[in-house]
Length: 139
Image (spheres, rainbow, N blue to C red):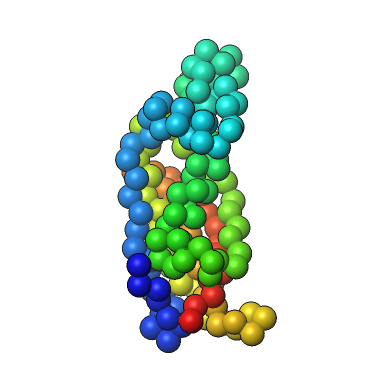
């Protein structure tokens, strides 16, 4: 990975998009095991239906992890200073998620040169699932 520099980044620059495979039951089961979040709403069809949902759906933190991956594919995790997210929609089975980011501002924070980045995940229908911001220190 080539770390972007403060001088090379401009307001409006887009981060390389992260395109993910279709959300399926296997993905949810693997994330449940990896995260320790075994809530049945994400893995048990009968439970999800009893809760009024048509089927199981993705963990919110899986979506946030994807946005984190978008950021750390662009700059090392050690440079991430803040990462905030707002969950705006359920990620259902068969959704194909695309994570994107855009530089909003260049600024100095606590003596470090940083960029403020807008991040978003959306499905193949353009429905936003998670929106947020990150602050990344750049050399």
